[in-house]
Length: 303
Image 1 (cartoon, rainbow, N blue to C red):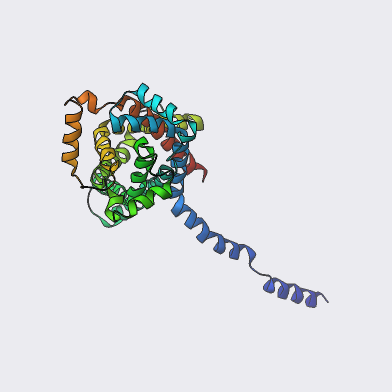
Image 2: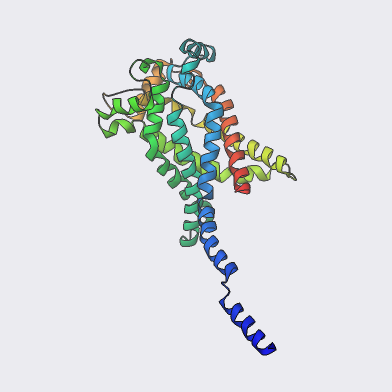
């Protein structure tokens, strides 16, 4: 009996399915996929959080950049437009920012790893190239930025009321019409990415050492905010020209230097007039990129 019982136990053990081994094999690829997409997901969520909070400030700034008016006059314009129009045009930046920031963070990490493996150049050079390539890829979504400009310009309020109508209005002018202002966007995206990713680490290293989660969050906010404010001020004239180019529907495609010269003459050849709205842009960028960087770093630790 004892021998028979041992034989039966041995057979039962052999037939028992290897549950733990199978489970690990099933879960491992899933975890790998989540890890690969983590930077894209965190970047997209950070952008959504930022746009939802700062859109009204961005709209005031937009009016100043486009028309060269004072902050008070821009706010009065929005008041006359009414509350129902305050968030008019939020869909394009929401779509654009969630997508482009996902690409900005995700592609930068992927391309950096790829170039560091296969290129023999210094790390700074390879990471700079990765930043420029990520910024160039973001420019694919220029049409969303283009439509956002049209929807925020009160001169076009009577022509279309939503994103779909704005896209439809540009269709008859050809595909090139969606990409007005592409040159300043490429220039802005590439250089700003190089500065942002290149300086983010060194700036954080010079901040007080964080010992708690909240302290890390504050440091990430300060680091992102300072960089965003600096880059926002540096590239402010480029955005002024880009918005003027994108506010036009149809007609001649004017070059960047030609549009810049026209704006320079309109604003009495004064640098202060060219930078009108820069102070608001500085504070908006400080808040926006603080939110983006803090949210991104926080989600990286959570996911």
